[in-house]
Image (cartoon, rainbow over all chains, first blue to last red; front, side, top):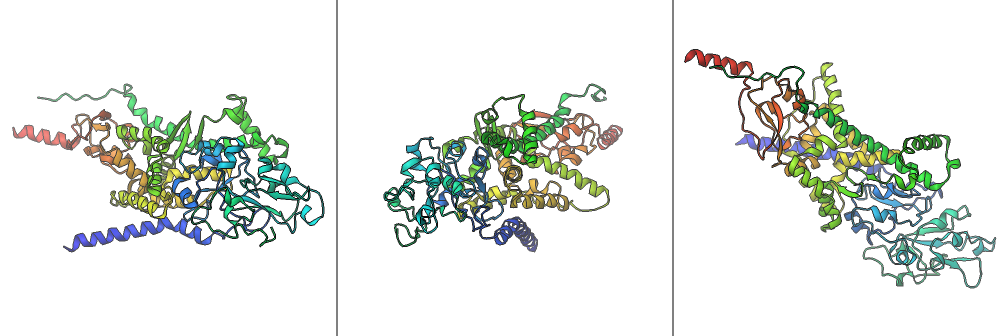
Length: 237
Length: 338
């Protein structure tokens, strides 16, 4: 009687040992990984939550669908798609973009090659990109942007935008003050060219944006931290 | 009456003995492709950027090398090198999307949805496994390439007198790993079987190392599996723990292509058992669903008693080989008695 029970316990102990050993690298990495390694460009903690263009609306749906094959990054011409390769956890091996380090050029190749529904194939047309790409949205710090504090004429962000006046334009009253519009998709090309050392323009998650009216384009997905959405004027952005 | 025994004449060995070399060629090619694809991807981004002068000297050397390598095949590297993309986990092969069945299963478990274009991309691998068994494990898997080299390292260590790595565990354990991996994927909503599946790890870690910022955690996990193979059991990960191996074993249970022993030619030399990476018992017809048709035993057999055959089941144990000493002794004894 005791023999099968003992062998079962032995089996169980071995199994637990093996499972512990298997999860050790990922668990340790998760614990040891710094919360967010500082960005190369800004030296601030980099946001590593923005998904490539065409990603499913919620992050949990994206994690469900993504198998971590790396095809999206392999075809990405500017190599802006990075991976959670060392921080373990649920996000392990899923792609993200840090637009301030490397902006997405919206070539839409990643959605085309993605074998899973994680990234949707979106045609490379302005209207389709306005409608479907929801990477993030640009934010302008009006307390340091050169034209906004009257220390120069710039407009680099406006000129670099691939999407045109529905995404970013000049303020009505002052021709050189940039203003983000609701259709900005957060590609980050404007951040790349911003000449100000502190990068007053940056890309944030759409829920965190204070750009007036962008929420009316699409209601926030359930479970997204709402931040200060809609509260234009509360923060100096 | 003396039984006729066909002893193969030297110089007329059957071609199937060279299949193992072909297998090594395929394994090497797959691994070389996994090294080459990130390099091609990197090269394509350099070409697309039109910024040769902005590259560092090392990057320029890399660019020149890749240009030398690819210029015979294409004049437009930006678009002309896209025939093969991805890894063995999921990739595009001359316009055909192919995925590991485990990737599909893991994704279904994580998302509870069927995305048909993705599910269908595992159709060819599944069909191949149903017909040919664990052929992926033996012939394609990039981890197998490293694991078999690692087995040689372990053999050298053992020859040097270090006595470990001979444990035998329960080979049903991998089915539990597969089951648990899928359950955890479903519970946590993330394809977690990919984290412990060596070929997926190899593919993406090589990509991270070559084209991005260096190895990730998966490389640590893979080194641990190499140590496990050396210290605990030969090919222990594939035999006892690999979730993909478990899935392929299940799919290949009633495979058509099987290695079979011709008992009349077998001399019980045990070379096949010694060479079998998975610790099976070809000398006594015990292959089962674990056999990955790697053909190493066929290459090792000195009397060409082993060959590929088409059948849905293994032969039952046929007993001692007719060229073996025990069978002949028994026959002689039987003759004397009669």
